[in-house]
Amino acid sequence: MNVRPFRAEASEADLEDLRTRLARTRWPDEPEDEPWRLGAPSAVLRGLVERWRDGFDWRRVEARINAVPNFLAEVDGARVHFQHVRGRGPKPFPLIVTHGWPGSFLEMERILPLLADPAAHGADTADAFDVVVPSLPGYGYSDPPSRRGTNPIRIARLWRDLMAGLGYTRFGAQGGDWGAAVSTRLAMEDPARVAGIHLNYIPGSYVPPLEAGPPLTAAEEAFVRERDRWREEEGAYGHVQATRPQTAAYGLTDSPVGLLAWIVEKLRGWSDCGGDLFARFSADDVLAHVTLYWVTGSIASSMRLYAEGREVPLRFAPGERVPVPCGVARFAAEAPMPPREWAERVYDVVRWTELPRGGHFAAWEEPELLAEEIRAFFRPLRALSA
Image 1 (cartoon, one colour):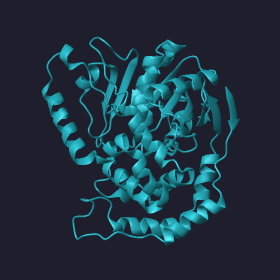
Image 2 (image 1 turned 90 degrees about the vertical axis):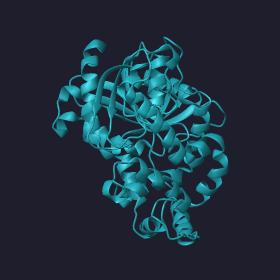
Image 3 (image 1 turned 45 degrees about the vertical axis):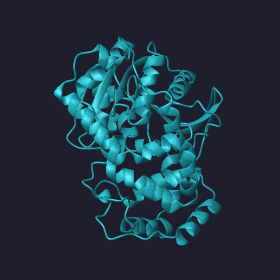
Image 4 (image 1 turned 30 degrees about the vertical axis):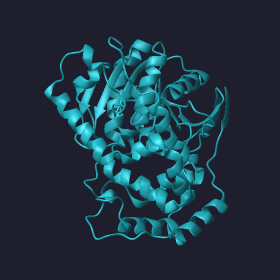
């Protein structure tokens, strides 16, 4: 596997073009209405745009990115960006952590040092991990796929080969959102090498073989109703991205404010912020994530993963199971999220923790809580993998 170091460095021309586009924004009209009911309100966006144009410093974000070891690897014809931090401990355990949409590897910025160097953060040095944080194909600095077929199964195989190329014969996987789907597929593709998977989300396309199992519990019935309600009221973005992502991509690729609105709505709606975006994220936190999409031009290719994933939903035949131990951290504001018994119909759930706060972007919102859950889940698996 060909691996070479990588440095993030957007061109000054691209950053100047961004500022020019922001200054020339053509704002839509907005009716008097309850804020956020129809989407992202201009009051929030105008403040962010002003900061983005005149105060936000992308070079400082790049400096933070480049302070971590970054690499590009050629894996089975795909060029994949990843961060790789060796653990500080007696025997670090290899762990590959996968983000989702509309996230990126930047989601892991705060949790990465907690996992790699636990002793520096008040935890046990024996819980250190060698942490690999790849960018999904078509996200950030990973190249966009040029042909159909880069779905969660294909990505799982890329991650399998990436970990093998890095010399890891036994490892764990962790993820939320698309990262949960990829981690699940990775366990199914290579259970001999995947010691276990830890998820902070159950993949949205997952449906167990209900006809072969016991009747739904009251909690499962409530989940199905809530899932269907959520898809009806909140799922328009997913339907667009799974059916006609390219049409939406023209506007989102051409307009930084359009891109900002598309992502900000999800950051507010899916996080544990109580309806106040800035109670959970700073303006610069938000702008860092959106700017990464902008300077890499990756919103179009990131959305196409929904169309790819739609063709290979996570469905199971009677008797089929995910063949490795699974841990689940259920964060308070994550929705829709099934009860434990729904997951246990297919997953071998050995640890399930209900957490008091945090939402969809767990590693970003509550890195300490998630890090402790990951440490606890993998602790007994380390000995089995020795």
